[in-house]
Every structure is written in structure tokens, then in C-alpha cells.
Image 1 (tube, rainbow over the protein chains, first blue to last red):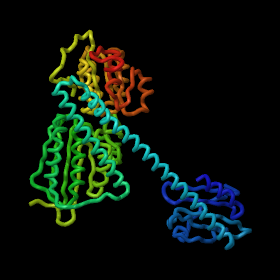
Image 2: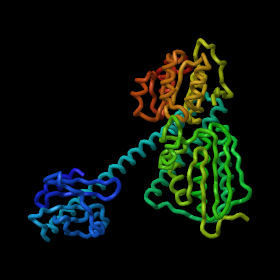
Image 3: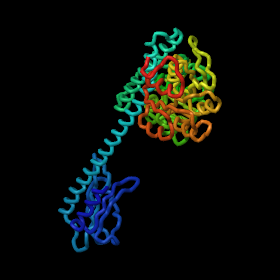
Image 4: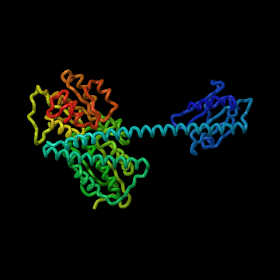
Length: 345
Length: 147
């Protein structure tokens, strides 16, 4: 609080022999200035000041002034002046101290707003950088594919493979555009949920069918374990998105090893557990992995996955509603729907 | 998984080892691996693919036929930067030409300083790809001026 330090200095000895400005909370942030630092004492903030009311009081025969620093109706700190025995504080001193506290509050609030704006700009730059990077892969494929198709002497089987690549990359770019839109909705709080009756087991089977080409290419064997249907009241689109994301990431980082998907219901909860035996998530990354654009991957730490970055934002936010956590190579999703309760026919 | 590209149609005989017309393509994106292998095959260059750095190093150490390595940077398990560093530490791999193909323009100077021979920024096109490949591998049907 460099400006606050200046404020503390210029008010001494006008408003008192020492001045302390403190922001409440952890860690404690305070600046002070005293005519005689050896005699300076940390103020004992009276309850009335913490409650937002200024006060004049006496401590050891010396008058004290204490006024709260208020930002958006919240008491975030206080300013205290210790007077002298020869000159007790007056009502005019209290009024001046309150005006000073108001200016200090404005300074602090401006600093907070600036910091928030700076971080928002930084996040936007980061997002644009990642988005551009993610686009370059599909664009490379499309570029090379189109140039290949323009050749006259490309064998028919090769041409068919290239056309299939173009279709795949087009779908990938469409999904990416959809994900970008979803992220915007998540961040502006305008993500809409359209709940209905959903069989979680059927969703898992549908996703596995849709991802069959990716499963085949990965080399992983995907098994689905479910004793019965698990039916609840959720948003089918969001559930599909989360299941797709979890399975896609297991395929990407599963190193071709088996993937188990288990769906169960108990005690009013539905649980989905996706287990792979590939690259694990480092303990230090287990919370970071849920932040937008974070991913696992030893060689590409926290910034890239073919399908991961944007889908991780999905994992975080709709799943925030339903609840999910990761545990190394095992990702689980717990859902609790309102009435009707989770159950099975 | 290390895989050899095999396409029906005009696949030519694998060249003799002293011709070094095999290129190792390393990328964790299977579609990029596939399209680059297709393009190389059209110019009679054999592509061997690897989807991460560990597979790539295994392929390099297991083959005496590689004429060039096309290397992505951001991959799981072992990044392209780590692969490049490992290659430069290994006398058997240190002189193997490396073309880095990346979507991140910030890393160009750093990887060239580490010993990469060329740097291509994605998205790449056929001419740019074949220009750098042809510096160390004989290609059929492509010239500096294009087709």
C-alpha cells in the first residue's frame, strides 16, 4: 500500500503522533508512521470500528482516533491515530480522519479494480494464444488435405482417406467453436440447463458408440460396467458433454491400455467412474486440472490436449453443479438430481 | 505406438538404407500423422510415425534408415523439446536432421538454438513441408519451384 504509506506519513503530526492504516484479513497488511517509532503501538481495533463506525477513545491517557475503511459497504480495514497527552483529538479531527479513510478506500478499490482488469486481460491473452494454437493443428491437416486432393494422380483409396480426414477436422473445428461459445456462457453465468429424465448408462453407451473410431485408433479396450439403468433428472446435453470429455481424455492419455467406465446408483446418488491406466495427473496438478484450459500430459504441461483444454472448462462448470473430482487415473462424477430421486426401474 | 505408414496404391519399395528416404514424423495428433504420411508417400518418401517423444526416440534408436525427423513440440509423456535435447546428447542421434513443426511461434528461436535444423509454423502447406524434407531426403516429383 505505497499510497497509504504516504497518507500515514503526511497526517503525522497533524492528526496525531502516529498513524496506522491496516487492511483486515490474512495476511495482515498494514503501514504506519510515528514521530517516535519506539513509542508506536499497534492499535487495538474496537468492535465499533470493525462494525463500520468511527470512534474516539482513550488508551493509557492518550486519545485515539479510529475510523473504518469501507469499500462497497464492506469494512476492509481501518485507520488509527494516536494523539498526544497535550492535545486530545476533537470532533473536527474525527471528521478529517473519516474523509482521509474515504480517500484511502478509493485508492485501494482502484488498485483492486486495476488488478482485476489486468488479470482479466492476461486471461484473455492466454485464451487467445491457446485457441490459436489449437486451431493450427486442424488447419494444418485441412491445408495439406486440400492441396493433396487438388493433385490429379492421387490413388482412389488415398483420396478416400484424405476426404475422411477433411470430414474429421471439420467436425473437430465445429466442436471447438461450440466449446468457445460454451466457455463464454459459463463465464458470463448464462449457461442454461434443460433438465429431463436421463439414463446415465445409456448416455455412456451412446458416447462410446459415437467415439468408436477414436477408441479403435487409441488401441484401448473400453468396458462399461453397469448393473442396471441409472435414471435421474439432469440436463442430457451437459451430461453427454461431461461423459464425452472424460472418455476422450482417457483415450488420449490412456496409452492404449484398458479403460473402465462404471456407472452405479446408491443412497440417492448416481456415480460415474472412468478409470484409465495411462498417464496420471501429478498431485500438484489435481486442482489446476479443473481450471479452464488446463490439462495433464508430462511433456505438455497444463496447456494442451487435442480435445482437453476447452472440455476441461466443461468439466469444471456443469460438473460444478453436479459435483466431480479427479483422483489420479480415476475420474468420478457424482450426480444428485432433485425429485424424482436417482433410481433404476 | 510406432507404425509404418502403409497405403494401398502407389507405395514404392522401401529404399536401401544408404538412400535414407525414410522420415520419422512425431506428433500426438493422429490426423496430422496420417496426412503428412500421405503427402510424403505421394513423393515416394516413406513415413514412420510416432505419437510421443518416447516412441520417437525408440524409433530413432531402432532404425538406421531415417533421413529426417519431423517433430511436434507439445506432446504428452515427453515433449519435442525434451526429444531434441535427448537427441543432441546421444552421439548416435545428434547429427540426425530435425525439422520442428509447431503451432507456437514463440519457440522458434529457442529450438533452433537447441540444434533443430528447420522450424515450420503450423498450418504447413505441401511446398513448405517438401522444401525442408528435400534438403536431406531425396523426393520424387517435387521441385523447389513446386509442381
